[in-house]
Length: 194
Image (tube, rainbow, N blue to C red):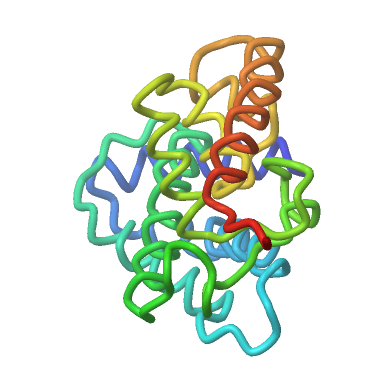
């Protein structure tokens, strides 16, 4: 069923990109459900009472995606590859707009072991993670994309490989190296108790 769903999403994305507004109507429940699952996995790590709820995140991402205009969607993986940095940006903008500090304070913490983990640390500051991921992108864009697609986009290794047009082995290697690099960067951000 997942494969049929993937083909249907790809077909509808291409039709919508070609100007078929009816395709968008049929596409909406398919991608909305998948976006919600991605957001739900991500938001499961947020503290109780977090002000940004899963549905609000999905709605905002979906509205921005629909407003993209006539994008030439290639396939389902392309759609979710565009969705991943968009969700990341929404979450980071929300965290920063709420006055969260870069190094602690009222910053929401993400237990990364409950999402596709970036490191073995139990809590990672979302804003610090974004800063570290941006620094990684300056050093190695592909490794940054791997983390973004897997963590923020919820894509599998195979889907990430498809989006980046590399092998699954390359994604796995990049993922391992990126986790080590990010752990090092994030440990620099953590104020040490003295």
